[in-house]
Amino acid sequence: MDKDVLLGSQHIAITPEALETMISLSHREVRFHSVEELVASIDNHEQAIAIQSDGSESLGISPQFESAVELLGKRWTWLIICALMNGDCRFTQITDRIPQLSDTILAQRLKELQKLGIIRRFISDDRQLRYVYKLTKKGRALKAAIEQVQVWASRWM
Image (cartoon, rainbow, N blue to C red; front, side, top):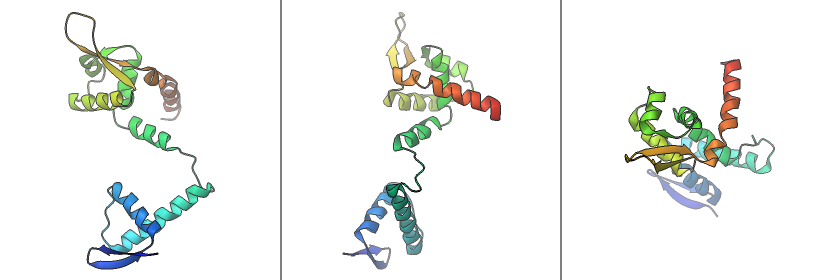
């Protein structure tokens, strides 16, 4: 049964499926300038869902892959991971290895990588209170991917 929804100053009848799609799109912070634009987006989104659900036009990309690409596609993330591949590093050692990287961005990326379990922060063993960053097993597992991207970049870039 269609639901009556108020959009701006217009009432439109909408199916429960389309309403679900609208809610899904709103969580992605998509903004629409007209009802027609919203309806077109709902139609496209529903077609994409239909294509993915039957598998005929699926790209075979998992949500995990999309998340990994989103994380690793952020500027400086790969270089930070590469810097840590050579061993534990303090914050200043990373900035020395990547001089163009600002302290603010480095701090953000390190927090993201820690949250995802790719790196670990701990206090060093020396007498001074210093934080040291180290790749976890999950982070070290990226070595093969980094090497493959380097081979590809050497050949094609």
